[in-house]
Amino acid sequence: MIPSQMIVFLFIFLQSYTSLAYDPDPVNDYCIPRTEFSSIFLSCKNTSLVTVDDFIYSGIKDPGNFKHTGFSSIPVSSTVFPGLNTLGMSFVRADFDVDGVNVPHFHPRATETAFVLEGKIYSGFVDSGNRVFAKVLEKGEVMVFPKGLVHFQMNVGDSPATILGSFNSQNPGLVKIPSAVFGTGIKEELLMKAFGLNDKEIAKLRKKFVPQ
Image (cartoon, rainbow, N blue to C red; front, side, top):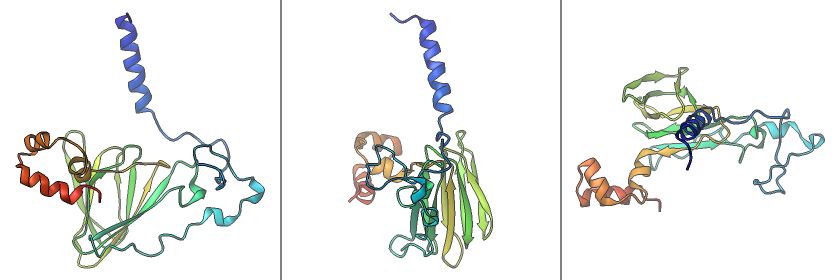
């Protein structure tokens, strides 16, 4: 039987470990992945084969297609931009139609800074005490969303808007609250009790958020 002191020690250790988890520091100046190898087994290009093009990405020069949903995001990670590999960062371009919404969501492994490139965006986050920090941001302003906290954005201007977001993780993760709650296999009975909804309302939400 494990002594109670050992249990306490393990609990404190795990709490400390998880709270300090972050992308490891690189051991080289850079590591451009070799595309002929599986990403499971990281292998870097010989530095003599690396060129300036490995550190340039042109995939977010133009806005995404937001006409259907009112919102579009183009994530930029080491998967599409190899120069980011091992550097502990990634970013995203988000485009909003008028009244477009980026639904409440969070990134479990990264803090995000969001820079308004164009437009007016109602932007904010909710802390662990359920306090909301939100205001309308205009072109040139930046807001930070602490790691793991729910945040949201909505275009409140009269023209399309664009945000550039950066993350302090190569793999920040993304959990969209509506999809995580209504688009997964959580029991209908639990959702009905938790949100005070009937079975028809739950079915309607499931139809909207379950991945097709």
